Image 1 (cartoon, helix red, strand yellow):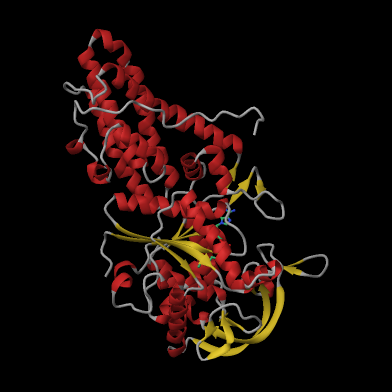
Image 2 (cartoon, helix red, strand yellow; image 1 turned 30 degrees about the vertical axis):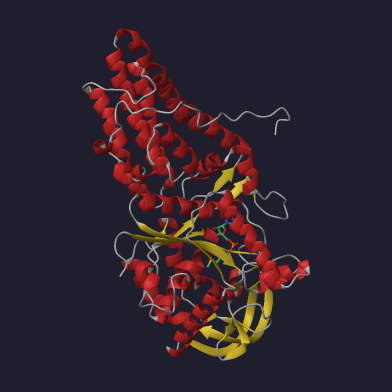
Length: 518
Ligand code: ME8
């Protein structure tokens, strides 16, 4: 069984009908920060991402481009892989649903459901949206003036009639409700949980899980006129990646059930209703949590290809720098809520919080150390109550941050770290080490020591959010790579007075508009 120090986190696998944008980068970023945090906190982590390559939507995109679907998916999937490097993501695996390991896994799950009598053959007659890859009941649709119907997401729907296998979802409603009840944190945030509970309480219908009118997908074992429903195919990736159907060995034993499936609110129903129902029906334990985060808009407008306002994460990184983008995305919006991307908000965070609050603190302290303490960690005398309070606050941040990270409260974690950064700035002003230089150089050494030690802690806990910049900051304190995990928090591993430090360098430049004003 998975022990307490194991952590398995997954992103949705993204459709390769289109190139990656800020929304995809956001979800994967949240997972990367959690994965990094847990690794630093001593966990054995598996962090999975990948691409969802089957189904009608992808098949159509390939056709539109006049390319064979496999060649098309190879190309677009690579764009998603490239983004991982650009964003400094640390996924341990990248899964593609066109891989052989996945076909084996999905077909094994199907066989399992079939053997257990959970799947039966019938005919489907109803509405389908290719854009959402979802079936809709007529009661969920809105009629437009021209007589056509649209899904609640605004996506067009088409009438489909074809032979289809069905999954007995209707039989799982009560069991799902019991499961949600027994696992109150299975769906976060709470508001989303309530939506799901009321959807399931309204009664579930059996779900069509195969299609016969196109070919791009995994064939149903023993009946290859049928292609498996792309969501059954896609959701199974989470167990494929840990070796399913081999449940008795290796990674499955170590990592399943997953600790967290991170998703956007658009795909919560698939993850919080269908997926646990499939798994329970197959006799496999459901994941521990699904977190549905909110939706980004661009300067107040919905992000869409047709509006031409899609934000390219690569362009953002080129303009503002990677860590500023990573910071902004998780700081700007309470995680779970919708958020708006704006240039003004980005620059305000960069200049106010990164350059001023944190950058200046480090720069001021390290420059004073460099000039007045022979470029080495200062020697300190006895700590006053003010010193002690400052050090305790820095040492204590990890406890608060850990609690927030356990419920994906990224913005709260950052806010609590900033409380300490601001407290440090207050302490500098109060203690005025530049005055102490003449009046009491020994006391100046103590004050600068306290500050350097606080900066060490701030940098340690901020590593998951801004790995590149915090690595630079820890380099400036001459902290070796092995001493950068959370085991090195606290007095026992405090900076060693007298240790030579490199010349200080700025870590967070202010953002200045160029002359063209872009
Ligand atoms: O749904 N704001 O893939 P997908 C925030 N293949 N997040 C956004 C976003 C936005 N504006 N736009 C997209 C699929 N996302 C399926 C998933 S999983 C077994 C199969 C993010 O390419 C968000 O995480 O449409 C959303 O859930 C996901 O991209 C949808 O990606």
